[in-house]
Image 1 (cartoon, rainbow over the protein chains, first blue to last red):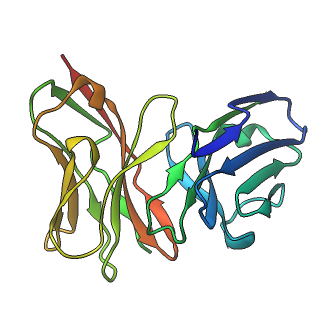
Image 2: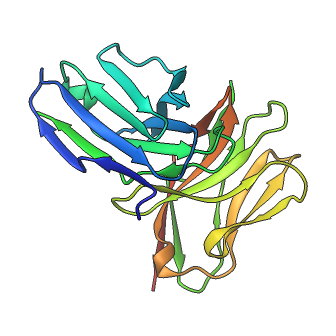
Length: 113
Length: 111
């Protein structure tokens, strides 16, 4: 059983489109995250939710909107996709805080053409 | 602001030799420090963490890391490298309720 699963694994789309990435964890964790990994492999947090509440919202454009319907799910919706959005997006979860072990999904490679 | 630095983009080691992946951290309070590993086309996996106490932390897959307060370093080590250790390694510290990642070091272990 995959602990943190995200879909799709690959997403190829045109500029201007809207797309969503879904994430689910079956670990019973309270906190979930979205990270972005750029082409140089640099990782940066985008959002963090604790029990469906937004805790961290880094300086991410408004076109990115996370949604957490329950504590096991954290989806990422992106409006009006731009070339610069091309990256690998990772979902992760932890029991409570980021100082605990994070479990990562396998990533969604987004390519905007 | 809190930060971590990994001075080497790439480390090359022969199988069976000891390996070290270097990391230094910004001085700010008592840091929580971590190492994560990313295998090709996969998500990150937790290796180990330092909170307080013993300066030598043991982790998964035979890795360990040494916390050195005077040098503000947290180097990752393994006594005998395996080809399967080839991956991207991230040194991470806490900062403002979130994790701050180093830029990563690509470890290549050749047979």
